[in-house]
Image (cartoon, rainbow, N blue to C red; front, top):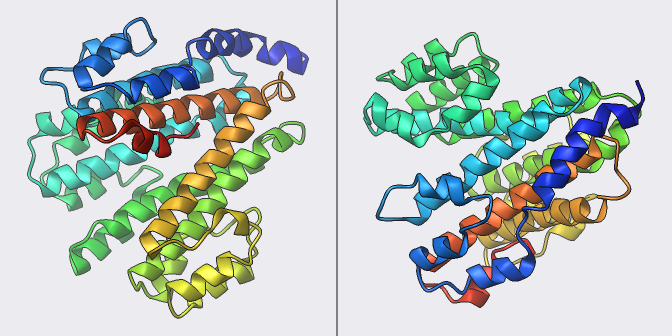
Length: 350
């Protein structure tokens, strides 16, 4: 079977879904909405209408963010199901990221002593249905302590991260380590999934994989420096494998005496163009994170024609779809907070 035949089914789905993507003009118009009711009115007739209709009143930006993400999950699952089997191992990562977020949410909800029903309401069970993990995640939602969650998930691929994170939580009273280690699991999975791709497919996935993986390493190290985490914690927090970051570079950042020293090393790295000093470390990191996301989005937009009949095509579409949901989330939170349209637009990937 040829590569063309392999991707014929998913290309038809992508074509249909791409036609539903909102234009830059439409997104800017949405940012000018006076309130969330007006915003949702303008979204009638779009692919998001069905999910928005399920949101309870009064509307909030958080409820709309959930509707946008439910649409993203449904669309992503549809694309993956129609992709060739050899590509799904990699593409499934887009849903595993939501699963990691589900586990983080359950941990925080358990600390806050929410009921099992309240916990279920804040996670995305549609992801667990696709990954066939609903039963165990629902069981984890019934846990009364983090220790019980860790025990319930002891046979999952998150087991080691949860166990180590639990130890940190019991010592420090913070879930930061748990969050970072769960993210690390996803990025290690990303690297191994990339390695398992065929030689023909790797070039089309390389940009996405390297930006996702390496930006996580750099940004985690920089965030760690702002919080004065020690070198051993930082080594534990980042993936062992990167694409365009030398091990020596990562180790130098780990051993840097402060944020400024670590940033200087980042500014000498392959990814120097993504970093610009801002008024404070937090702003510098936030700007770099947005720059990485924008690079992915721009690559996705410009590679549509050249990557037909390869894994690059679903990756390009899914990246565009994620960017759209990012933009809609920025719009809804901005409109709710009565932020000026031009300021909302600065938060968007357009």
